[in-house]
Length: 264
Length: 304
Image 1 (tube, chains in turn blue, yellow):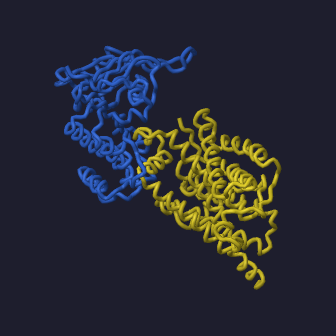
Image 2 (cartoon, chains in turn yellow, green):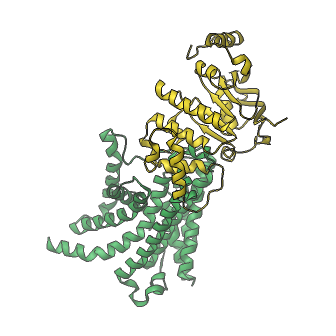
């Protein structure tokens, strides 16, 4: 039996504990991903999807519960220490990249994620050549603009760059936090296609949060529905084949209150 | 008019020497403001701290180079303290800087034991390097210029190294930096520390050229530094790290020539701080007046 790539057991996070505003963002969350799983996380606003991703990445320390990545307990590790295992693409294209720095420098930052950084020269010729090659697969012409500040790129270009930066190091775990939600439909599709290609090619264990039910059905091998900080429903590969958007919403509704969902 | 030009011309070397010394402070202002996005006022206290530590050690017979080194170290600690106060207690960066700066005033007085110390009779790095010609402006320019060139070169190399790139990322996007495995707190503390170390070094060199230490010597140095930085950036631009690191040096040289010119034209020295403040205010307000949003904005951001 191989170890789970990600295992969250009893993950609990309570905001404003002991006050009238007490809110259980995560309430005894249990989730396990096998190596190579492409898991789609859905749920209404406030269901705990973002808290879940933040807990995994280390941005949100758990009150109780454990998180293991590839068998190693990371519960106590800070976000920047967990970065050696995890790559993340944020919803906001502005957050995932350093806007005032060049494309090449951003690629450098990603390449050294979780590795020791020394005083040696950063953007060597060899590295630049490698980055050009990696970026050329996007077909956006970014490979010819290594010296351009990322802030001058469009949202779609920045998100594509974030994706290349995230996958180029073959992280143990890839976190996608509604990473196409802020893009126009055409660009969103482009970024999504690139995502799927990279995830399948590199067999990355992936957690993708989305509000788009069609994406949830179309991509990945596992759907996790969250509600009130817990996993409401898990749908595996076999069940997932043949399921339709109305089916999915129906199952969601029978399990929880009526929720307005995008893509229905 | 001719006398004014002649007297201005005569002052050029002295002013260049002075501006190169202040360039250390301007570099120390630029680093937190521009690279780390951490508006910092510690320089105002670190500059006299460097002067007091260095001057006191020199009067105790310590080697002037060693005295400068100790001053640099003290400045570094002052900067680290400011950054730590901000990060640990979530206190606004400007307030953290004012706290440290105010406390440093007492510390500076304690170090010196009085409000000023003359250094005329002691050896300085200038008398050691240049002997009897130590007071010639061109000699000072060469010595301080070489030091500044060294610092600028080191900073440029550092900011293009793996570690330096990650420090810049902390200022550009703290969330992104953290997600790339960069320890945002450590990078911030080290960066602000180095910035104050530069300011303290400027102070330690300043006391050795002016021949005395005064506990009030730093008053207004930060706004002077900011004004010089803004002028420098207007000349060199900020598009590349090379331009950003050159801006303080260029700005300092141009700014002090401007001041010298205004003074020879008849601007009363008493009005100087008002004029400088008004200039900085105007430059900071311009982007807002134009509603363009870009330009010399200084943002306050609390890191978590």
